[in-house]
Length: 257
Ligand SMILES: Nc1ncnc2c1ncn2[C@@H]1O[C@H](COP(=O)(O)OP(=O)(O)O)[C@@H](O)[C@H]1O
Ligand SMILES: [Mg+2]
Image: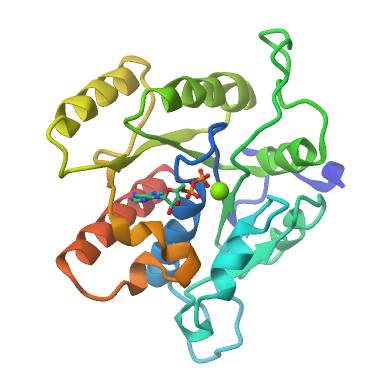
């Protein structure tokens, strides 16, 4: 299967761009970011056949985790409200590359599992993804990725994992990446200081980052259970701020593609 794929830089100019949300550490917001960036991107996308409601959406959200997080979330969203199509591979390989051949698809935003079964004893220059179904699905995805979004949170424990993901998984594959700070809590006293520290840590490594963080809001916490997208939150000051945060990520992503 993978022999039919082309590496970034070699492929046809007009195939869909693949954006992968990846970070070894679970709970950093990968699924939340994938779904809401797809929603923001889908809302601002120009549909080629606007008059035809059955036309495939230019933006696709996909998930490669066996649990099907994306599928569960999207299944709860009313269909008319879903500004993208979704694809669930449940960790199977061979599915994702198929949609790249469809010229109506422009962006494929892919969520990845929170846990990567990395081999702690792998040599520094060896591929640490190891051998598993998820690792194979991830390798297939990384083979066609045009950009990676790496979430990091103010909590120090996510920083090393972000660095590992970038240095060991993304850089060796020459995949451009974008770091985004998630869960910045503007209501906490010490948050600004911690954010400055984190920004400095990112900039020291010369990692490209989204200029401002995604703020922590309670409305995000139950969004997956309720099947809500940031583009559809009930109007409020918080909803506007929340939408702005994900729009900023979507715009920065577009600038890098
Ligand atoms: N900006 C945010 N504000 C508040 N809660 C968030 C935010 N981002 C993510 N969450 C919550 O944190 C938890 C982990 O997020 P999730 O997207 O599932 O992370 P991952 O996919 O990396 O494991 C979820 O309960 C989610 O609702
Ligand atoms: Mg997840």
